[in-house]
Length: 438
Image (cartoon, rainbow, N blue to C red; front, side):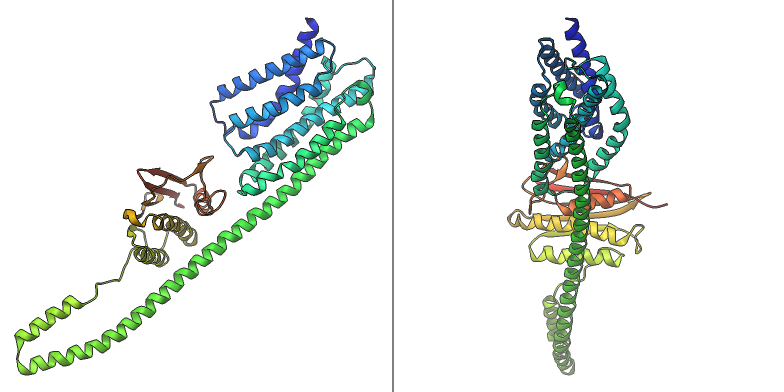
């Protein structure tokens, strides 16, 4: 019984720090209250320690077996407790698992190197001290690296990339674990045992470092793609403005030609003194005049141009478009950023409404400054509820999250603002608040 309790305490103290390390970067993304997560982790830890102590007390070496059982089990618990993409979580989980293997392997090798005995075991107080020393020296660097990796991983939206990239570190880990699965003193005492774990961890650091660089490139390309989209939208606005101007010029030339004919006929009525016929003709002419089409939404030229463009597109698609904006001629924030955000939201609203042309679709735009805050709200018809994942909107045009909404969130974050997307009663509501500079 004494042996059982000693091994149980060793297994608990030797494993618990790594669980804390694994969950620490996700402490703000827990699916349940912290006490619930602690309870789940505690139950899993007690079960693992109990089985390990039971096997060791009966004279067996249960390290490989216990790791083989609980590594996937702990990952399942990991995914249940953390609100994040499971493929990204798996990618980071493998790194933590390899770090655990390195600490355990190094501690046992050093213990064998200094106190080798063919009958020694690695579940004693001395073994725990070796592990804690190595853990204390390395954990600050590993924590920093893990946090940096986690931030890069979760800022990159590339579903097809994350679905497969975890395979690379997993295969390397499996090879080393199979090669070093025998934790007997005779095997641990050999330098190749230690070297295998060191090379595994160095390989993981190199792989993750290269992938971090690749993620930087992906983020840069995403930014370039967003910039290209903005340029395309700007060109579309300019083409629409040119078409409107050309149409107005043609209408003006036609109106000048028609006006000369009207004036000639009016002079004829005046010369004959037939005022009743003149009055009747003027009334018919007024009824035949085309409706006023000049639209003015906002004092700011760039914002008004965007609204005019989407107003024209909405009218051509049979969509009711209305806007009420109380903004100054010079915006209190970056004009390109606000226009990019407005264009992205209106583009999404227009695409949604074009799919619901038989449901009397509408787009409503409101914007104003209120104290130290700029508020923007866009509501539009949306009969089908959007797809959400991890609190983010999924794109309806491709796999993964929408680039437009992601861009809006980034701009809002840059201005200490907030973004809210909600869907209710077949209407999609987009609301943005931006803190104005003092």
